[in-house]
Image (tube, rainbow over all chains, first blue to last red; front, side, top):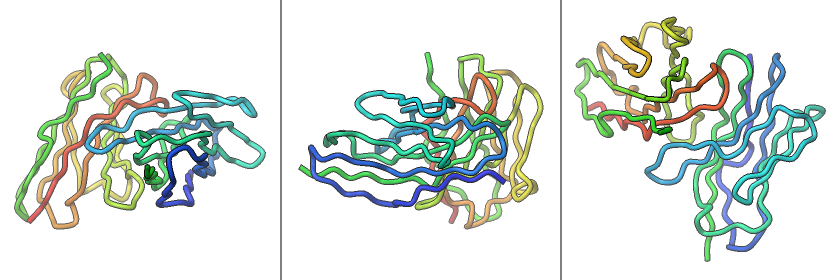
Length: 110
Length: 112
């Protein structure tokens, strides 16, 4: 079946540093990939989405590029802020039901 | 309004007792989902409604029921709660099944 792998469970960084959260996927369908962000005591919200190979998508300073050749959709930001501390989920869709990764908790220190 | 609402936000239940969780959305989305989320685990899809058609995951088929009396409303029903049901339950909806989802804030269920 389909699967999404996020290799980091916890990432801890100092404000202003760059970050990359890894996401790889396996799907038998043409992939549609998503990043969701969940801040404490809030609902998960869509951060980024893409189905276009090798095209960078950006939102709120975060960006990701879907690479079908390596089945990856890594999330990046050039300079993290304290407000970026949250739980980040990578998910695949495009078939009739979505598949989520375990999530990466990002903690940003002053 | 892109809000998905869930009630209650917190639920305490006794082992062996039933639990009913409620979700609503006013975006006229055709698909509504229920997930179970435990710490350090991926959200686990329990079931989803595509229009009026219920799809339940094979490994949770007998544990969870659901109803969708209209497009906006969807419930999750546990007939007899066990300790292993303690988790966050997330409801989501999407305009097209399998695509971008809008999530509710979740219901934290604790079974004692």
